Amino acid sequence: MLPDEGHHHSAFAAAVLDPERAVPEGVARANGRDPLEAFNVYRNNVVVSLAEALKSAFPVTSQLLGEGLQRALMADFARAHPPSSPIMSAYGAEFPHYLADHPATKARPFLADIARLERLKLDSYHAADAPVLDGSVLGRVPPEALAVGRLVPHPAMHLLSSAFPTASIFGLEQAAIAGQDVDAARSQINMATGEHALVTRPLFDVVVQPIALGAASFLRACGDGADFTGAVDAALEADPAFDLQQTLALALSSGSFSGFDPQLET
Image (tube, rainbow, N blue to C red):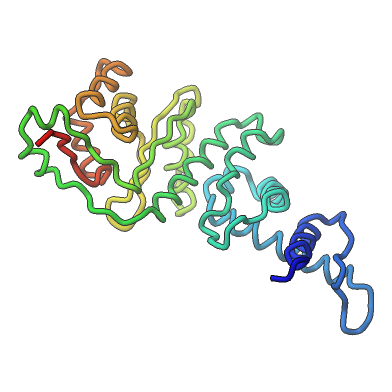
């Protein structure tokens, strides 16, 4: 790349995303006419394409925003946050934070957490492949080894704790997108109730499900590197009603772990 080539590309990209900027130097039409009109068409196409990419990545969030607000917010986001990588699956990582801070969503603060959950779902889908821990492996581990061993989280496993019933809302809106009648179920949701969501990829499809506080605390402690005993202690501290057997059954069936490290000295 020539010394001034990078500057030229940056100036061009900035002009594409800012309709107030002049047409960048070097842009012209073959017929010699003012290139502004044609460049504005190009500007619009770029922003629309980025907004459509966001809509595909956040379908439930888009539905909850409504078409008008969704189009406006995603276009504004695209102008302010152009892709930083050619890998488009990574685009939109900042969108949940953008929603949390935007004045237009202050009356519906749960939208940011819905977007966070959709981002985690996408991250789970694109996570590295890894084996899923077979529950029979744990059955063969001696109690003393289990106590000090470490459950290894699967790369596709993610957790979201929300002050809102995010996982329930997400599930209902997914059903609505699929054409199901969810009006009655929507009316039963208590927006004052927080939820913890588990995101996993047991086979080829990503699964999102609500889980109890104790289960979320156990899985989060495992993700932070705690040994089995430490993870159980963290779960019981968060929720004295923590059910270890139920949590292990859920975690193993959903592919939350990729292995078990006994961590015993030899």
